[in-house]
Length: 328
Image (cartoon, rainbow, N blue to C red; front, top):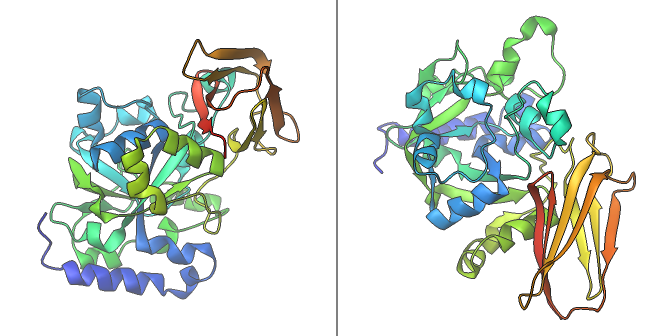
């Protein structure tokens, strides 16, 4: 894809933004280097297989979207031209992510503000910001493009003039500055598709969810992307308010799941664990009304012991973990 005439200026502007004293302290100092796209782990595996990030309009038209985490209410207000673009954020932990991240019990989800906004196992794709902003056709906004009042821009000089202190704002704010909510959702849009050649990092919320992503990928892709996939918390991109699996310990005759102990959505869930050896019908453990224990620890024993197996856990039908046990 060809570059804008001011492509080099974008790299300079990103460098300038990264050195601003109000931003350079703490974890936000790395935010300007990247553009952020998050999606459910099942979609993430499909994106890596396709080798490109595709617009929502395209994946819906071609029935390629495994998990839809966008609010239907907001999408109906979003211009079709925007939906025909790949959409990225300038930052992680947006207000949109606040509503969608993590597994809600079905009973809670029905009564939430945005009941169709649900991203059970989010995976972040971090793209080189200067490179993507430099592409011809790339535009960016000063707020959420799913709501009114946000403008679109293209040039490096306009990039510098964006309200960065509001876009990168973190924590509480003055109620008289409610526009900060919209500014935190400022976007970058690329027409139709974005190549993964600009992808720098893939970030999972936990080691268990990293295992889940790898389990959904063919081995050739695992080899290709293994060094770019991390579950680091050095720069935390997630809210971690709702239920997720942090770690899974597996042995030949037992498995222990370590859920996030500080989840605000302990249940009740319909829990299903499916364990398959590949040479017969899977063993199924189903439990209605499951509540995440306060210490987050929950496990199963099984007999006879198994030399190897595949394992899958769902909560209210949402994939929470998938992995394998192989002898060392």
